[in-house]
Image 1 (cartoon, helix red, strand yellow):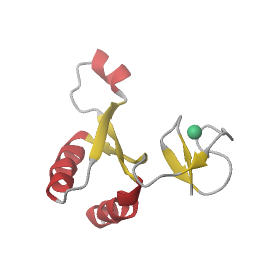
Image 2: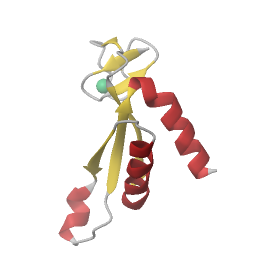
Image 3: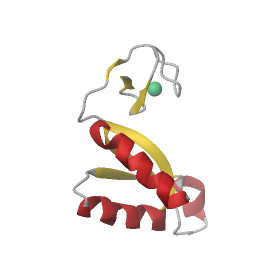
Image 4: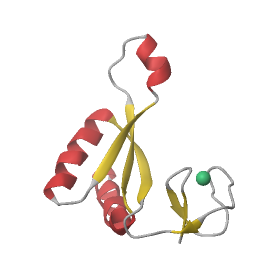
Length: 98
Ligand SMILES: [Zn+2]
């Protein structure tokens, strides 16, 4: 598994599927990797849940540019977790959407 430091993305192959960069390195267990884009309410609940499970996560506000002009409070988050937790968090998201 490789890792793009520009996108915080773990992926298989030589080239980052998001930005196309070829200067990538092998992913490390504690790299924060992008998991998904989630809405704000789901993201807040998920953060509480992950904290109880002792899984570190980072939520970055995303897509606020246009919406904030209209004073809409519901932006999305980009969810990042450490690579070692990536599979289990993906499974949690899958279960939540099922
Ligand atoms: Zn990239």
